[in-house]
Length: 307
Image (cartoon, rainbow, N blue to C red; front, side, top):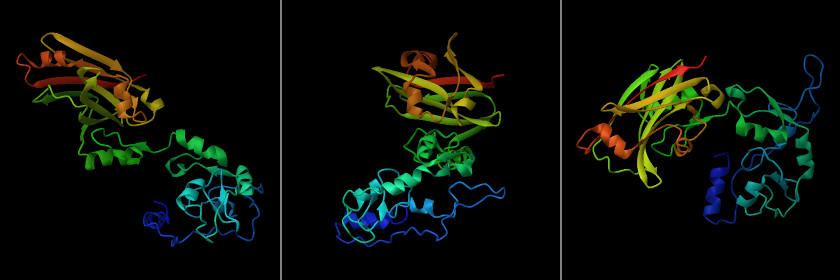
């Protein structure tokens, strides 16, 4: 939570009339002139600008950047539209009623700013007009990835190395080196299908990581099993690879070949699009043996890089 947010939350939950939390005051340097670069050209306002304008655009309550509508109290203290609701229409600085005054001057100033992407430290070095920044960041290829583990609602995000360590240390996911696999899935009561993920295995192949999912779920009224591969990277990189899956027994087999989906696509989205090897339960039980009392499936496959 942003600075000041925790104390603010407690004040609101206790229905207290006082707002006794510290407010981060924006300070503007007296010399608000654009700086010049070594080449003598006028520098652009940016994340690390020393002119103080960028600091003025930080909300005094949550310290996030403000976007229209930017609100102000009669004394000129500004805050974002989200925090205006949180403080119950009372200025947290001077305690005056906020009303519906917009700071049009500050909104106009923001139009002249150019700022870097929030994922600059992850590799994005582009500069954007202030009001285009959010739209870019929603699709920036350097933005953080969500944890690909599907067995629980995991909120962890990060770059690929961070998520690989997270899967291994926190979710205890099996890690394997190699581009071929031969996995056996066993379940004592195959008649129980509860939309539950059974297994996630990560393969290190071609210096990249791939997530092999295998699970049981209901497809309409029919219970099925499904195996599919996701690539730990963005969609454009995923298209450089292909994979195949095969399951079978008793001189019969099912095969699947496709391109791994990026983990930008959620596990559920891939599953619901049926983009993988789907095995109807009756056929899965046939592959498992004559007694049909236990699921025993062997899924084999390989990953290769497209030329």
